[in-house]
Image 1: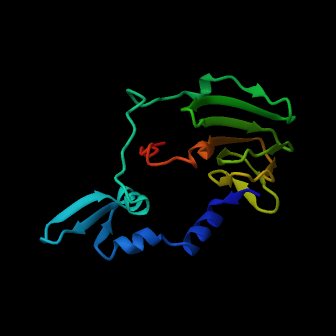
Image 2: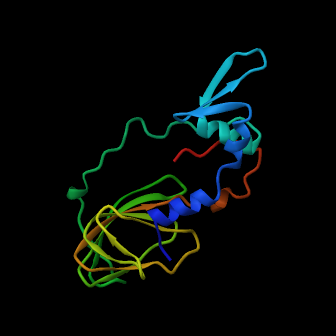
Image 3: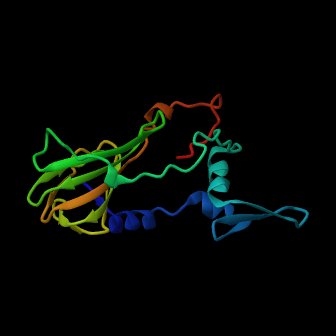
Length: 187
């Protein structure tokens, strides 16, 4: 079943960051920066995410080399709609697929009354329109989330709607990663 932004916030509130709580014993987090007080009294600043990651993994974070020289800008209005064979009244614009982990961007148009199955490992941001995802309603600027392994997500549009899909990277091949591959994932 799709999870709304409100439901995700409730889940996050139930499971606070244990790494963050432990790191607060030796420093403080402020505006995304972790400041650690060294034994000699000096302060050392580090990105808050990186500090948490290094604490959890017990090793330094090593970022991969940059893959894109410049930011990638897209003009979705210049892409063509492609009708989806398996869903009447649904069209897609594939904006791009990135990296070997297949992070992807699509825009879907769902005609009024049409239904669309939501893909797992995806977040959908409603650009326009409204409809239903099971019992919960969604409208413009709603976010729908479908977790890995969840195949129950389906929406029905009450009005013609457009949704931006962010297909989250498939990290399953990295589950067995060891110290021999110490790079952190950056998008």
